[in-house]
Image (cartoon, rainbow, N blue to C red; front, side):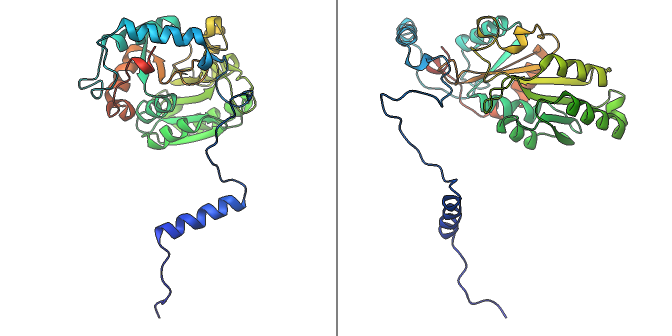
Length: 289
């Protein structure tokens, strides 16, 4: 006999799940910090968001480009591209010792866009268990055949996972299938640093055919670590041994946007296939200074 009770509506469902979060002290709300408060929780590591010098340079740049459109006219692949964006990509890539760079509207978009399109069908993605949610989303959207996490900052744990991949998949051992290893250089929750040199050496040892690719998220290292804030990869001289790097502008740099650094061919592939790039309106001057 069919139940005569009225089914729960969508809004009633919303009320129910929010009450559960509130009961678990997990319900978040928007707040405003008092003007005189001291910042111990934001990503504004260098206090540049309140820098009068940076604000002055920003306004000067606006005045220096009086005809520059403040809004976006569309995706860069259509009519939203600009010489300013291309020069910015070239300058940032050169600054970090990379072949090429590609701008995204945020660091989150850069991570998810990269992992959604670069791993090919059947490839393997191995990631640190504390890696950013944007990496996990990109992996979910990708065509990779398998994704595996390893213990946080544990070279031994990575070695075990890579060996399992080699033993369990002949294509990985023979170099026919790629393995991407995703880590952060600095992890924001505890502030601990990744053992990047040891991770690189482990990857090269277990996958000597060259089908292992380390991808380093430098979001929390940008502006803070390395010569002139270039990040940990540059600080350790690993530019040629790391496949791709992410830098974000929305943390220490007090701006908005993100950047993937990689080889020129990878740039072409990401520009062509990353939906986070193809279907997003282009950045303009306000987000790119």
